[in-house]
Image (cartoon, rainbow, N blue to C red; front, top):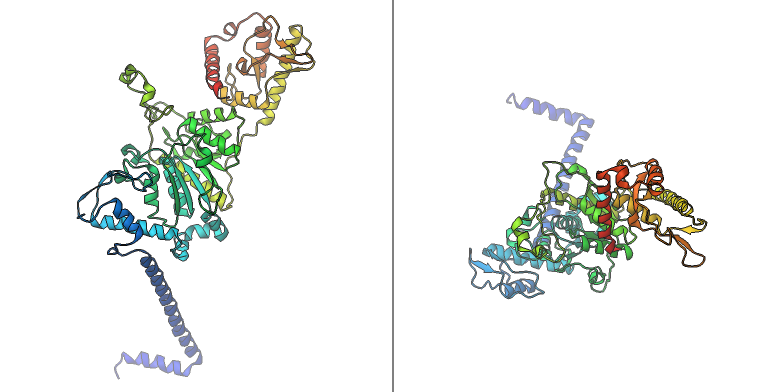
Length: 542
């Protein structure tokens, strides 16, 4: 016998003589067989699931699927060959999901478009294996757990504004399992918007954003139901645009995403949601921002260092909304060398009617520099917040400023000041009332004077005081109604100072002979003038 067989013979002899070795060998062989069986079963199961998915997709040669026929009716492909130019500009229907643009499509691309549309339609009818959906959402499922994912899948979300922020929010929500999305935007995809749009391609330029987004996302998540509204949002159309989901379900909206960059429309949307108790999350300005570490999610009252946020907060406070709106904002401050809102060329001003340059009345006409990554991050933060809220996952965004007690204290100090001035003017101050509320104080402190004294810029021990003395022939107190006395005081009369500064101001200006200009100098007077001018401009929104 050959020498190399000797070790094998000795090993088999030891096995035959040792019961322990026999058991160990049996266990090893059994383990290998069981492992192979399990792996084989998993592979077979994966093949079956893959085949089920493939069976859902109509074959290329299938020419009579109703959805494919619908596309074929719109685009005559009877004589299309590779490289043929297809004109999407031919007599489009207002209800047709595809809108005009000239593109080059190959036979394979046309076939892919047909299959994508057909698959999406069949999935929305329920002809799509739920196991495949769960597999696609597997990572979200283990993160949010089954109840959380179920809540997310059953949600109905409305997204208003589908630019850089809104498109990324919509894309993330669709990919994460939301089954009902209403998309609202009046605008079309432009070439310059491709640097920040989530899914738009060159072929989508010139098409409505709502349909470009739907067409791309249904290729990723074909079970999602889309309600596309190629419309401008407005206060008059809000009841229809934010209404319950169409059909028999009548499902009320679970969340609204505000991704509008026009102040008037933005305020109208947020006001409608607050007044109708609709959950909303709002995006503030991502333009001219570049530092992702300064992006925060918090209450709108906590948002700072952003002109859009400041204007929106100010307008909302005028209608009694000071907090309660989750907002994505950046705390990044502008600085020399950083991007700024670009001015209009001088020749445009010479032409006159600059407002006619905007897409719509009251819309921005100047170019806003945008780094494409920043709107994307704003949109993803919004989508993340909605997923955590609906999935009931623990999270702790920045809370609202707890400053209401401070406003009440400032109001009490103002009341005391007005009573002192009344007595100094020879009027009994008992029962004197002032036409200012704690909400008015909050508005003046936070929005008009940015929480700082007009004299020193300090932000502690603040109080409101009259800027000048405006007593007329009937005095500082109105007593025309019997039994009623109230101070003749308007919000535009008040400025913010520290308590120490207010004491000096009362002694030397309100009850003395100095003017504010003599006491403070030109810079302070000009600052107060600018703030009061701003307030007069905003007063029309009250």
